[in-house]
Image 1 (cartoon, rainbow, N blue to C red):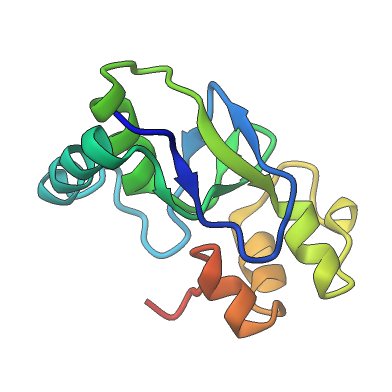
Image 2: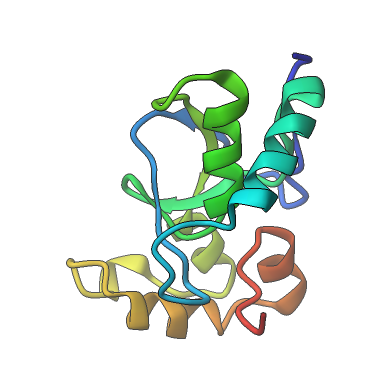
Length: 131
């Protein structure tokens, strides 16, 4: 496996975290598409992590469901650390204060806040919620 290449166009601080659990903002599906995970894992086994870091609030990932599962499969480690950027950093770009959101990290509140981000920034970090 090669050195991971994290795509981070806005230059946010990236931290490799363990214990990150995915939450999909697009749908309520419980599991990622296994064929997509397998394809990504095969690519990651060769190239390492390629793509944007996942966006997290605490240990809850708001992006990267498939990438997280694929990375764990590629590294053969169910607890493998994944590259993360903080949701608060992205929201700060749009002058949004994460602390103003409910302490329970309600998905609907996060979705409403994310929709206020510049479209290119949201898309770069997998937060384009139109799909």
